[in-house]
Length: 414
Image 1 (cartoon, rainbow, N blue to C red):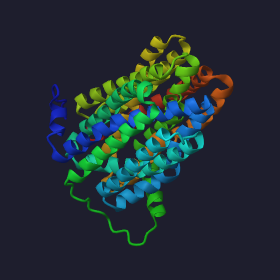
Image 2: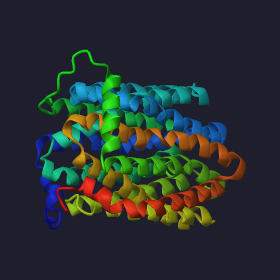
Image 3: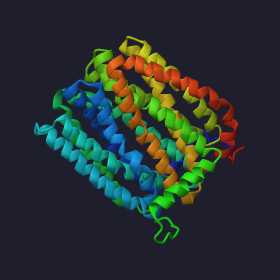
C-alpha cells in the first residue's frame, strides 16, 4: 500500500464515527490521567523522599498486569470489549475521586497511596486489553496502522499537556487538584463510551473450557510466530530496563537536578513531546511496511538517549535527551503494537494484546522495583547508565534476526 500524502490518513480515520467518539472522549481523560500520574509520583516523593518508594508505588500500579494481563486478554476474547471498557471506566472514576477526597481531606499517607496504586493497576489491566480490542474494530483493516498511531499520538500528546498542566496546578491547588481534574476527565470518557454504537464481535463458543487453557493456547501461538514472539521478547527487555525511568523522573528532578515539580514537569513533558512526534510520524506513514526496521533503530536510539540523560549535570540538556528517549521509546511501543495488531489472527487478538499489555505495563514493575532499590545505593545516574550498556549488549544480537522478523510481521507487504 503506497503512503498517502499529507494529513489525509489522519483525517480519514476520524471520519469513522465510533473511532471519533472513542478518541474524542478519551482525549480529556488522557490529559487528566497524566496530571494524576505526575501528582501521584510527586506525592510519593514528598511523603518519603525515597527512590525505593517511588519504585514501589510505580510497581504497585504496574505489577497486577503481570498476573492478570493474560487472563484479562482471555476474558476480552470471550466478552464484549466495549462493555468491559465501560465497567473499568466507572471504577476509574471511583479511583480518581477517592484519591482526591483522601488527599484534600489530609488523610493520605504512603500506605494508602500504595492501596490506590494497586487498585488502579488491577482495574487498568482489563481496561487496557479491552481498549486494544476496541480500536481495531472502529476502522477498516487497511487503516489500522494510522488508527493505532493516532491513538498513540493522542496518548503521548497528553504526556506533554498533562504534566504541563499539573506543573501549573500543584503550586496553586496542591496534588489534590490533579486528582480532581482526573475525576472530571474520567466521567467525560465514560459519557463518550455510552454514545458509541459498536457491533459486538463474533466469538468462538468455548463451552466450559478454562480461561487458563485459552491463555496456554495464546502462548503457543506467540512462541511459534516468526515475528510476534521475538518482538515481544525485545519489548520485554526494553520495558524492564528503560520504561522505569519515567517513574524515576521525580527522583531525577529532585535528587539529580535539584529541581522541584516544575523541573519534573519539564522532564515528563519532554518525554511526552518526543513520544508524540514519534506517533505522528508513524501515523503519517500510514503503512506497516518498514516498521520492523524502525523499531530496531529505535532500540539503539533509546540506549544512546538514556546514556546522554544520565551523563549531563544540566537540566536543560537532560530535557533534550528526555525528548529523544520519548521518541525512541514510543517508536518501539507504537510501532510494535501496530505490527502485532496487523500480524495477529483475530481469534487470538485479545489474548495476544493481553500479553503485549502485560509487557508494556506489567514488566516495568520488575524494573521499577529492582532499579529503584539499586538506585537507593548507587544513585540514579549509575543505575540507568548500566541499564543502557546492558541494552546495547542485547541490541547487537538482534540485528541478524531483523529480516526474519519483518517477514513474519509485514508478510503482506514484502
